[in-house]
Image 1 (cartoon, rainbow, N blue to C red):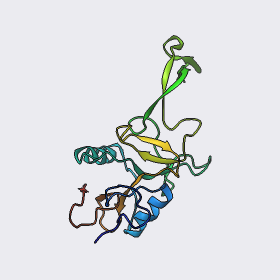
Image 2 (cartoon, rainbow, N blue to C red; image 1 turned 120 degrees about the vertical axis):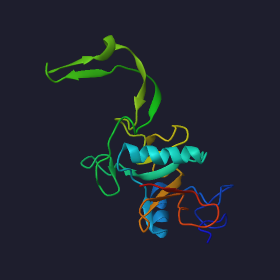
Image 3 (cartoon, one colour; image 1 turned 90 degrees about the horizontal axis):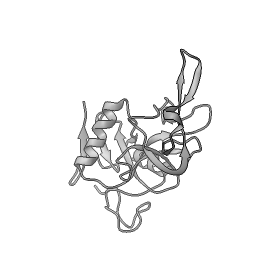
Image 4 (spheres, rainbow, N blue to C red; image 1 turned 90 degrees about the vertical axis):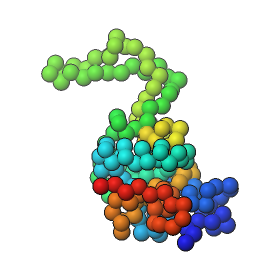
Length: 186
């Protein structure tokens, strides 16, 4: 069964027929047509297993996952509205031209101080205080760490099939057939 051919929307350009590039909303709809949803990570081990699989498969695509920033009150959350953990080990680090200091808070002293005598840092960890985007992607450029991206940019969907718990499809192709990339996790 062929899920995506060059002549069918949303595939465009000279892309692998199994991995189409779509917006975040289209990626979620694509996964749903396969009986699944965009992948969400239960914990750091689950996340690491998926990233290891992507690296071992030598994939160089960027993927949409099931995280987003719907509004201020929910903040960064998964598609089931559960909160996303921010910071390390999940989120990418980005270079900035700005000289930024970092603060360390000492609750037992009730004070906040500049770290390392106010040293200048040129990196920030996604997601930024001022959003780059409201949807979450894992990108080859960032070694598959999460980053906040424009929801209308084009990436491949990374789907989890809800009928077959534990099988993860790359670009919605974890459903069997020739040339299918699958990862079965406990």
